[in-house]
Image (cartoon, rainbow, N blue to C red; front, side):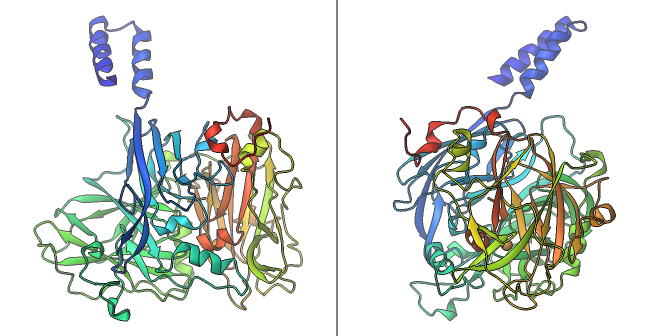
Length: 575
Ligand code: C2O
Ligand code: CU
């Protein structure tokens, strides 16, 4: 339909030729208007053996990972979610989509909507306003990594030239996998005594992994020749260049990704063009996406491993494997080489080096404001509350309110969450980030940060020591509703007087929606509070989020349009 209109206008334009600028104006308005992509998704549990071990998996229309959403910049995406989980609520977050004008479609349960109850239908309706590689996942408890994950690929507008060339486009989604259900894990994490989830049983590439079934020795439960768990095969044509869109939605693991014998050029991060750089392996944290270019220029008579390995925690999981296969090769057999074992898990130096390398492409720099109106320092620590183990920000472990923030803020319900402002700093004069806190007790609260609309805000994420001596973890922080500038990274305690001046990049910082906080380090980001709504900012490690590692930012709440009643199913009616 729109194509036809476009053609008619074009011929009209040729007939009337110059002078009629109004017509050419109308044409561009027409072509700027996106299409609508509609999906109907039934969310259901099914038995699957994605790593050869049979367990209940959350599927979308029968598949896990779910279908990839393909859209073009400016399109409207409408997803009707039918919760077929029978006994579980759900909600789906569109990770990396800013939801400008549609904060109620963000899918963050307890922040922007009530959960979707079993049997309910819910419509997500939003515009994908920027090209790039994004993802979606459940945002209800720890549900996402029971399989409810997928990718969103937004292509550029016609005529727009990307700053790199490739012949083919492929997606690779990375996840980690446990044999225990998420509800069992959740119970352990929230109980006294605390039960940690442990390292994953498998790493999955495109939803497939391989658990060693001889460790179980029960054919009905685990069979290594099950086709459910045959590895993903990337077929390539010799000489061609591939854009691989790699995303990680691990529940816990920081990963290293590599393709045997093939270097990768990093060209995109979280939907922003990167000043290209070459790597032999790529670190990727949960919530991040990268596009890398590879050229199929190796001996086509060999096969090559595509591998992921755990970093930043002592690994206890086999390498996740897929296979790169040149087109003329028969499928079936595996590469003859040993799978890559990845870099040293506890070597943080190359991880920091990669973080520092990621800068905006010179033709695509979006300059940050030179100064900020406010700085918020967020100390990340492990704490105790009544003997329960928690994660806290400035010694406050967050708790979710009964009524989602977006609703209580907009409707001015003041008893729905703690109205006192969340703390903007910690005692950085005397705090020793290198040792276990002398008093590890924290408080819990549902308080939030309320920002002045359109103000520029700096956030300093400050890492510290966990409850175990000589231990600091990596935390990938993800912001809903925003891209932010990554101003810099440092080690040790951030000094508010000197560090930003000395160690920040205001020239060509990359914009991202997820950024790592490295062990014993700090990460500085800047953003503009210009998206009316209530937005989650949290560690993307599921158990950490569950244990309180999160904050919420409000901005411009009075500019938010009329809330759809469909998000309010858990709110008592006031009339
Ligand atoms: Cu992908 Cu709130 O997260
Ligand atoms: Cu974390």
